[in-house]
Length: 78
Image 1 (cartoon, rainbow, N blue to C red):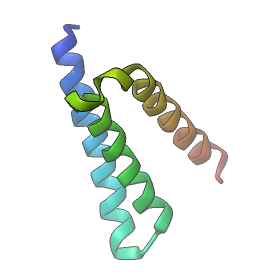
Image 2: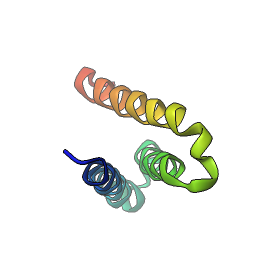
Image 3: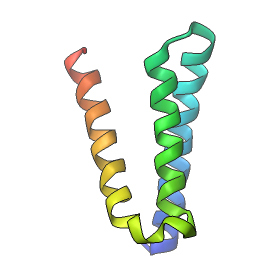
């Protein structure tokens, strides 16, 4: 996969995940869903903002860990 394609796939999937969390969280006032959605938006924005390019490696790993923690918390029922 080309790097540009991967970049747009990451952006699209993160925005879709954030949108799902916000659509579920806002009407029902599920604070954790709202924070999770905002976290995905903040991390994907930080990953590709030119001003934060020097932190791109750390941001990429933060997005991976954030996604892994969310997956683990859903799988374990917490």
